[in-house]
Image 1: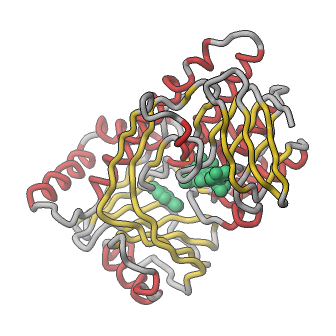
Image 2 (image 1 turned 45 degrees about the horizontal axis):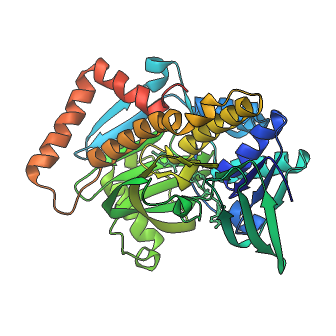
Length: 388
Ligand code: APR
Ligand code: PHB
C-alpha cells in the first residue's frame, strides 16, 4: 500500500489524527496492534479541556459531547479532613471542563473514521518502522497471517506508552526525562449517582478523588501501594477508605454500591525530546506520560494531534516550516501540563518517606491557594490548559 501518512496506533491520538488529516484532504492508513473491541473496552481518562472539545468538534466528533458530557466549572480540594477549598476555574478563566469518558470518545472516533472510509488495520503484529530518517519510510506488519507493507511520506507514532515508534529514535539524538511516584491509584466505577462536582483530597491516609462519567456512573480513586492487588481491595474496604479520607460534609453525600470495574495504575511522568526524527513524528502517550492527577494525558494527546495535523497539512501545501518545528511547538504545551500534573500530584499525595515539614509546607500551599485569588487564577489557568 502507498499513502501519505502511515499512523501507528488507533487509540484516541492515532484515530483523531487520521480524521483531521482526512478533513484536510490527506490520506492515511492506521495500523493497530489490538482488536477494535479491546481498544473500545479500555477504561481510561474522562475529563476534557474546552480546547480538546473544540478540536474534537473540528474533526466532526463533537455531537455526543454536547448531549452527554457533564460540564463543570469548579473543583474542590479538601485537606486535614476538614478544610474544603472550591476553585471556580470557570469564573477565573472563562473556560469549563467536560466529563466525557475516553470510551465514548473512542466510539465516536471509530464511527467517524468508518463514515470517512479511513482504513484501520486491527490486530496487526510485528509492526516495524523502516528508514524513518529517509525520504521514503515504510512500515511492515503481519495481519490475518499475511505480511503487509505501507509506504508513506510520513510516519505518525501514536502507539502509546508501550509502542514501537519511540524506540525507533536513536539514543544519540533523544533525551528522556522521567519521574516515577512511589504509589499507585486504585480506581473503581460504580453505577451510583456521583457527587455534583470533582473533589480532590489530601489526607494523612493518602490521596482520594471523586469524579464521574455520567449521572449514573461514578468514578472514584484512592492512593494505594503500587504493588497492591485488586484482590486486596473488597468494595467495602474501598468505600470505607474513600470516605475516611474525605471531610464528613463530603463523605456524607457519597452513594455507595457494587463496583463494576476496579484496577490499580502506577503513576509516572515521562517526556522524550525531540518528538520527531526524520519522517517520524510522535504524538500522545508515545511521547509523554503524565500522572493522572489533573487529567492531562488525553488532553495532551489531542493537542499534539492538532499541531501535527495542521503542520502536515501546511507541509503538503508547500510550507515546510511548521512541520520542522512540530516538536518545539508541541513540547511547550506538553511541559506546561507535565509540570502542573507533577506539582498537583506532589501537593495532594502522601509520599512514604515524607517529613512533617514537607506536609506542613504542602498545607501552606493550600492555605495560600485559599487566601489568594491570584494563586487560584494561576491554578485555574493551568487546570483548564493553555491556549493552543
Ligand atoms: N503497533 C501498533 N499499535 C500499537 C503498538 C504497535 N507496536 N503498540 C501499541 N499500539 C496501540 C495500542 O494498542 C493503543 O491502541 O497504540 C494505541 C495507543 O493508544 P493509547 O495508549 O490510548 O495512547 P494515545 O492514543 O496517545 O491516547 C492518549 O491519554 O488518557 C490518556 O493514557 C490515556 O490512552 C490515553 C492517552
Ligand atoms: C477521572 O475522572 O478519571 C479523573 C478526573 C480528574 C482527574 C483525574 C482523573 O484529575
